[in-house]
Length: 410
Image (cartoon, rainbow, N blue to C red):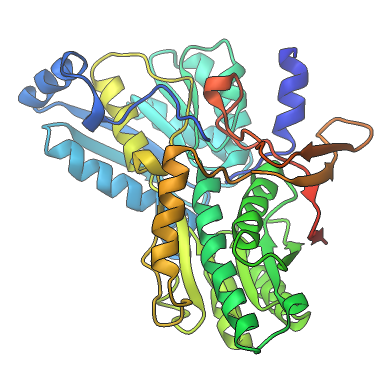
């Protein structure tokens, strides 16, 4: 497939904004002794590196940007223990517009050796700046075009968040099945509501893996998706969650930046599975569990590479097995009995390859970005779709864009 067509196929279907195979990059902890010698030398010298981080929001969202700040802080602490001091320059509430280009220029002029852009819509502006600062390394998180670029100083990074969403789906599905078994709802009332940011592949991949996880333990489950057409709009996210509950959904999940779907679910008296942060603090009677990317391993890997003058992955991804995707603490006060044990079983299966989130059988229909007509994907029983398969020549950014049977969208 030629580069232009691949970029068109993927980029419009992707977002922001979470593979069976990880990238070749490894966190500092797992490097071989020979590879870490330079890092030890830098540590002995007390090396300081200035790193820029451009954020679409701020940590007050208690979601997406908050999760990046958590990764930043954890990486800083881990690197300091090795003698690598990180001087972070963070720019908050930057729009997916020319202000992002300005932010990249300002950080480069301030002497940042590594600049990390945290939102999908930042990449085009980052790519305009990178050619003028060849000695600065630029990272676009949750995107893909840098991986195709001939520029040597641009990179993409994501994590296999679909693994976490599948597990969260298992938690939600067990709760639905418990309600069916108790006679609280009928099998056909096991409807999941999903608040999605945009109809991009990243979001579609996420809610599909969540749904397949739920359906693996609650076969009668179905799903309704409402898009809010924004990564971070607390009011619209709450409105969408409330509308889904009003339409009969018994469980709400989300691919959006704020905690308002959780609080709306609690107000409506339905259950919830979150994203980016533990939401039991704001919705203790509703929120069962959340999944999130832990950005600390990647930040450590990229920063140590720059400190040591080493090249690092053009396109990086890792999953649960490497600690880059995690679940928050299970809310056992409201989770179905046996959920913790089932989670341990499924997580082991994901790690050893006996369970695949996108395992068939299923059929879906969708239209790729730039295509004039929809196409159909059928995955047979015993087979599975290989998402974010960097080792297979694809991208870390999700590219699953088909709407499968059992899911409806608005």
